[in-house]
Image (tube, rainbow, N blue to C red; front, side, top):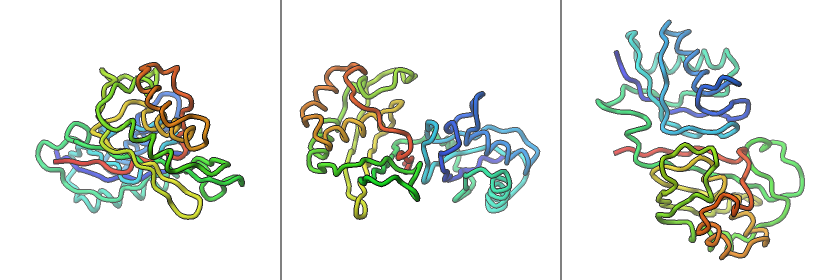
Length: 249
């Protein structure tokens, strides 16, 4: 039995998220079906993190155990061929034998997300489903000031989905930056060891309210201190969210 470490990219549109679901297609299911077609084996793929319906991935680490003798390159090529035939918008970017003891989720010591915003009145065409369109310019400096309130170790109950299964709402947010992208774009970059369900989308929603002038900068700190989901003003849509990277020792 060989454990392979893979790096995955996918377009979240059309998927119910990473995890296998009874009510719709998932990235995990697509990969497992492709592996079964290649090797005849039933195996479970494990990823560094779970993503919601519509959320994308730029470089998601995953692992899978395979009994058949196959090189990493052949496995990558065969999986990509099967995924392409199935019409799944998933690609294996890299594949290698995993080091001893490696687990895509439990060995991970840091995760990073990117959230893309496009500020324009016209509907999105090329970026439809891949960014959040905000029809007015955003105050970037106000958003940056508000983001500073969230960095550090806090109880993020306000920014946590009511369906979150994490044992504790306390997390340490290492980085939250608002970065211009192109003529009309903004990217919110977040990094932490781990995140709560909907945490990034909830934080982006609050920052956008500040950027639009609907919230004062201080209200983000007030919402955090409230430790109450009802204090959240806006949860950003899944369209603009990308799992960007994972870090290992």
